[in-house]
Length: 584
Image 1 (tube, rainbow, N blue to C red):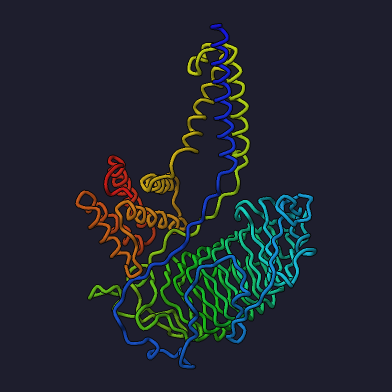
Image 2 (cartoon, one colour):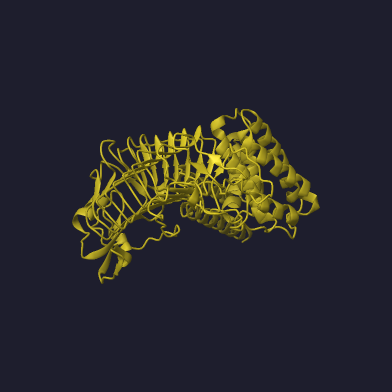
């Protein structure tokens, strides 16, 4: 009877162990992908100045085109707000949703009956009489299952992934466009697009939205608009394309906002285009950051333009353009204006230029003298700001799916079953189990798997990281970057880590950004809120941060290392009192 009782206990222990491991497996396989942080911009408050427009030639027609401020993008169809001569058109159409899962064999009419490729749905299912949504499941959609290019020639289509860009890849042939749009009212959202000539091409198209894509390693352009209008290109990551990141030709009334563009010949190129808004983009490490050619009435604002050959280049009769509230940092040449007729400030606010050496006697954040744009046009920024317009860290590229994410839980489950069988056979509790395993390698396996289970359970069942934990990780990342050689091109990334750390400190102490603040005002509020224990450290850290913005050659590295040392000290102090009332 006693033996049966022991066996029953062991069986119950085995069942519980298997259920736990199975639950861990399911949790690992269904983890949500990392979200992409939203970008925001912060602007300083300024005194009221006489209008710059009276001091320069740029207002030949008396006024600029002033588009509406950058707006939040949504995945609904544009047809409900068609812009046709200012008249809003409302139409009544039915809607249809189709499903695609790479390699499936269905007809696409339901999730359980998904089509095997996007091409099939575009050619056989979408119609001009309906609002069609194509939902694409995670997978790789390459030339073996897709036609190239994917041609969207029917209006009112939303092509969107269900799991985000990092999990849904369109891999081209390298010889044509990946997605070609020749219809209007199209939305393309949430794909990684690689190995093609042009990632997304729009020709003679209007009222479109291109958002949340990763477009990389293409031989020509990331996104190209030709004779297209009223299109929003937003929140895309565009990296390592050979020609242009985003190119507009003979197009008008388009918005380019909140994109990250790096490692291209020209980050944003406008050719014979007008009435364009370029706002809130991070443009770094390109030949030209922004290049306008025969383009006018462009508003360029709230961009961070760093470490490019030329930050902004206005040429070939590009006039009537407004450039203000941008950060120009670390470019070989910040700006070049060949023909003039452009404004580099509004009546109150200009741009931040990291090589501006003027003074600010009254401390209002605006330089007392103008910033000269390199000749030949002789343009000037009459209201340069003294400190950068603060931006959160740039949009991070989502990580690709890790195959080990699926393999490791399966191995854990198998090992758990093996250990459970040993438990039933030999009796005793799990902690004493090594005494029943005579083989050294099995003992090592048990110890390793036990440690892994502890880490695995901690990772999957702990609460979301606190601000303190994220701060510690950020400071550690900054320190790790100093373990090797630090190059000039690393400077923007390191500065972003510092900005992120200061922002997290603000959350730690309950200080929230205000749109009217300068960086200096934010730090002042942070120092006041943090109290005397941290005030001197924060003050010294911000002093070094200002040094970096003006430092040359090796000096900025020393200042960054000093900031890292200060951040380590602050983080350690905060870590000693995690339950402090200042914890947010």
